[in-house]
Image (tube, rainbow, N blue to C red; front, side, top):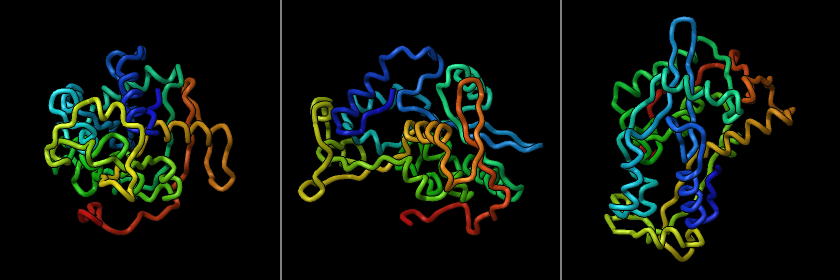
Length: 265
């Protein structure tokens, strides 16, 4: 079910609902949604998704360590799931349409640029840092969506206006943020669960969270599939009941500049 970002209360309740709902995918449940990306040419293949090594570690920061919404900024032990793990997730979901996809056709130079990024990301150990500030090209952690979208950004594969439609941005009151991001304050579950508004930025101290939301991406793809946008040139595809769009970027020059960004820029 989609997360409800209208307030801390609705976010908390929709997340708990996702933990409890029966999904039909007991091995691979994703209460926050999930994004997987694939790189493939004739000689190389990767099917990758960033996940936390332990979902209990994330849950415990709220229930036992009292981070409150500081958990949204916390770096957890992470890993990149293998192609085999992700392949079975896709095969399970194609028949029901419980996923959507975009396929980009790339020229060789752009493909190698993205492949080099994946290699260096692992070599630097960034694959072990899940969530955090969701800035993978700065080495500041990444959830599944932030990591996947960083490949689109690096390759210049979609314009910023489109990517902006996939983001949710909220201002979280500092009084709800504990843990390392919140000066190690202890935040009980109750104020987080019953606060009905995000921060009034004119009156309250706050932290801004900007996050690529898997549900927004899923809905965008399905809408683009059903109602083609004449301003974009793309084809449509389908795997089982899963809808997809196909974008040809082979004529697009590979962007200049390095892979890694200076923190804060």
